[in-house]
Amino acid sequence: MGGAVMTLVVVLFTLAATVGVGYPAERGLARLHPRPSRRSRGGVAFPALAGLVLLLTALLGLRVAGWGVAGAAMAATASWVISGMRAQRNVVRERDETARAVRTVSLLLQSGQIPTRALEDAAADCVVLAPAALTGRLGGDVAAALREAGMLPGRDGLTRMAAAWCVSERTGAPIAAILTRVSETLRQERHLAAVVAAELAAARASGRVMALLPFVAIGLGVVVGADPLGFLFGSWLGEAVFVAGTLLAAVGVVWTENISRNGSSAPRGQP
Image 1: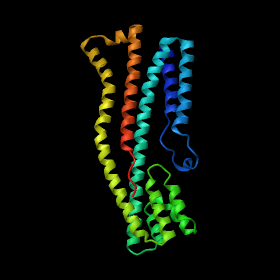
Image 2: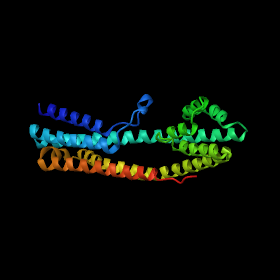
Image 3: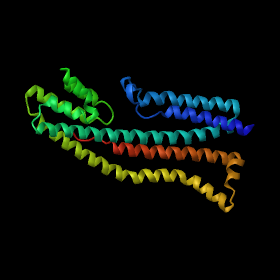
Image 4: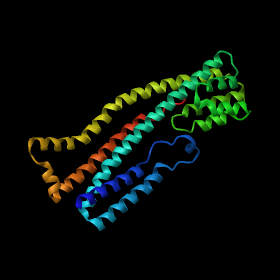
């Protein structure tokens, strides 16, 4: 009975933590709706999780709540890391697609096409340009459409393209030369981002390995017959050590991941 209750508690904490961490950026029509900021989501999830801890402590006792906290910490950290990796891959893919789109429009303009025609031809191969191409076909504000599309994660290059488009419309300056500079800047930034990501990969992997080492040590202790599980699960001190160690490992992973993500998303220069 006690094992079933403990399993139920861990499952509840896992679900609560997973919902609190969230998922990567929405796809499809969900992008049309405003998304809550990270602060607002965290401000709701963590007080709710703390209240659940207090409630379970009062109903089931400190020991069961402690195991629930440990399970929730492991599940929430794993979910947060995985969702962050997915979101980062999406951003990288969008940046590559945006840079390719700007480069395509630049080459078409250099070949002698007019801007609106070049935008339509490039949109046939680059989906990120489709809304702006449709706007131009209908006689709307292309710069505003590019600027709006550039607000999505990883598409900030379209904002620069919008600025170039706006300058060309207002002053009559040749947009081909401006977009060539924008395209070259985006290419250099992609190269720099790849170098930074490669440099940070080792530190990120080290942080994850260090978080797993305590659990590996427990397994080695079992193999050599030291009975670490008897200490961890058989006394209040062992259980407190296990919960505290799990929380510290989770904090270490989050800290390392935040440093890596902040380093890989450092501000970049403008063309």
